[in-house]
View 1: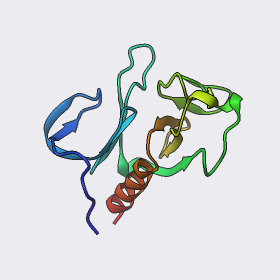
View 2: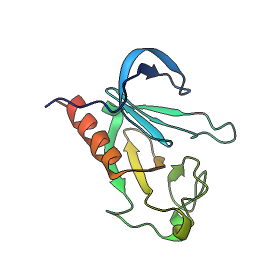
View 3: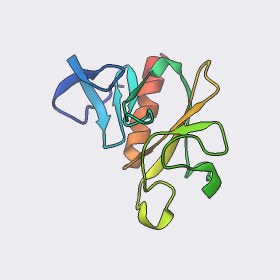
Length: 138
């Protein structure tokens, strides 16, 4: 099964989220990018808002707040709340009535005790991320 690309512009993203070379994105919204080899979480690092790049081969699980609901004290606009998840920037994440249909996703990375949390705009984004992870494990 091949993965369909969501954007026509070929590019790859380095560790800081900058474009380089030729590769196509499988999915991109204002919070994250999925390529055939990496998950890039935008506006991850505080205070500069630089991106975090994670090889898909290092991701061991992907969970959404639809599958495992999070309480208000388990979310944060940016940084780490009272748990082991570091959230990328989204000032609307923890204000339920203005966050709209955005979904929060948490990924577990092999050999890293801090999970990575980020928002995304479409359920399709999680499906594409999971498909890409499955493709890399074949």
